[in-house]
Amino acid sequence: MSLEMGKRRKPRRSPACDLPTWKEGFEGESRRRTRLSDLGVTLDALLILLVPALTAALLAATQAPWILASTGYALLAGLLLVRQEAFRRFVWRGPSDPFALVLRGGRLLSWGLLGLAWLPLFAQASYLALPAWWLGGACLYVLRTLRNRRILRRATLVTAHYRVFGLEGRPGQRQRKKLGTLAIYELPAGSPFGDFQAATSVSLRPRAFLGARLRALLTDSELRAVMTHELGHSLSGAALPYQLVWAGWHLLGLPLVALLLGDLAARTWPNSTSMLLASASLAWLVYTWVGRLLDRRIEQAADAFATALPSGARDLIRALEKLAYLDGSEVFPGTLERLGACSHPCIVTRMRKLCEASAAGGAGRG
Image (cartoon, rainbow, N blue to C red; front, side, top):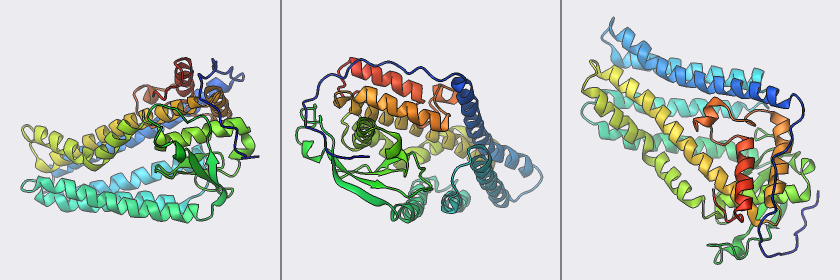
């Protein structure tokens, strides 16, 4: 597929667009797969809540809270990894990625050790939650960086300066229009990122990584709309406030929520260890939910950024339609999607928002 630069045009209002007519039987199958996905997320939440309840019951028979907390956390980590791996292998049949399993296990191990080390000091030094959280995040960052480098080093450069036309003159972009380009890399077939996925690095000099079969699936105009969405993660003024809040939430959110819930529970909870585990479990669920709500707004802002192209809304909708048929899940609203517990809005919701942004002139609204 050609990646030649299009002619530079002035931005104008995107044409009207309509939602696609889905193939017969697709909606029912898609909703079934979404329910399976929702079941996996619900199981994770139940597993997280199971450990403090189980530990509280065991504490009635012993006086070894630290050992019980360690056992409970090990049970949680093991069950989560087994659940996620089982769904990946037998439900979604995704590509094998042993390093991703190591990454998830390493994350649980690093934060678990830090959390358990904090447990004996909780009553006197609860402020240690914040540096412990940061240290755990640093461990995760190192593991994720190693994984990504391992995957991306096999990517092939397609073009170093892919120009997205139609961005000049957008509000707030006058000083950054020269940065309206991105480097495109293509991943080898069978990459853990997926053969039909697109991802980007959020920076002033963004890079996009495409699955091995994505360019063959999309037309030039559809690919350009997808690349504009990816560029929108770096340049969309509408996404910037949510990205800043998202960054602050990851730095401070979980410790603050955990301390708040712990302080409230300490006034009524009979056992400090059970109180700590219960408040930490609830804090993790709240933290994850708020983070996903922010992720959804960032995705919608990046979608709306594509309406800077003359037919960006229609092209991105056509691209999303093709991608929807490949996986089939998270296309139509499900229970968790309505609650905001998914990091991306479902595809139908994204399409509807694109049409609204197109009708409003594609001003980059989320």
